[in-house]
Image (tube, rainbow, N blue to C red; front, side, top):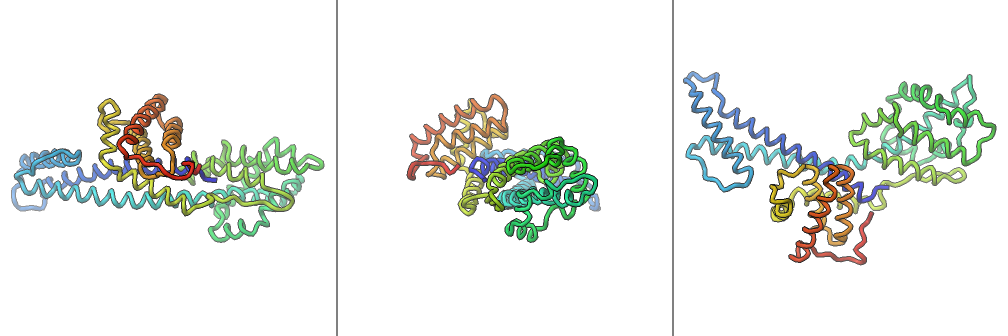
Length: 375
């Protein structure tokens, strides 16, 4: 099941990507300025290379001063001014495009998790089919495993796989190879198929073992899934949790598929709102960060720390039903996982000071019964 921490991780990843896109767009703007002041090789007129070099230098300087929000006067050269304006137009257009793409992509990435979860379950079914076809050794204990049979007969899972298309249809050779070299060679699996009459608990345990150790554990199957999903390092834990709960739900001949979210519409609103509000965080809050980081400019902070601080402030200001203490604790956890060892205490101290200042100024106004975060 998705929780709000998982959603924050997804948002943080996208914000990090957005900042990298901004850097790339900044370079695109530089490239445009550079291009505008290159000699025209097709011109019949003589080219003043020294003048073009000086114009380019002046345009670059003007662009950078404006880019950093400094007060500047327009250049007396109209070509320099128009080129700088064109560079800003290009930068802003690309930033807007990247923001739109990443905002939609967070939701797409999260929704893809259901498909990966179903594919992991269907891989167990694929292995059962291969086990049933084995002739030399009796694999019937696995081929007829009640839990796998329940998955194979599950109407919702079958419909989902038919609708989206099972991943394994395109990778049948890989599945055969994994069954032969990973599953069949596993000691626990060998012991299981050799047992006389495995108990219900044994039937459940071997599935849990195969998922945790052979599918999602280190090895070729995990490597394959990692190649398919660039966020696999985080997504794997979500998939593992969903599959664990699925196995635990098995009773008699029935198994319960897990939902990614109890209220996906509400979670989508949370994702979109926090992502957008962090990007559009008022300049006064960025200045508040600067004032409380030994007068460093916000842009000089390590990118991960800056993203975490700006996310935390955006959440404090725009989510009145989430307690400040919960927000601070959540971002400290993100810092422990994704930033430097020294950052935890740094982030904790900065957020504590800023939250108090924002409460005193009235920027933070909390309301709601119990102020309990939906974790």
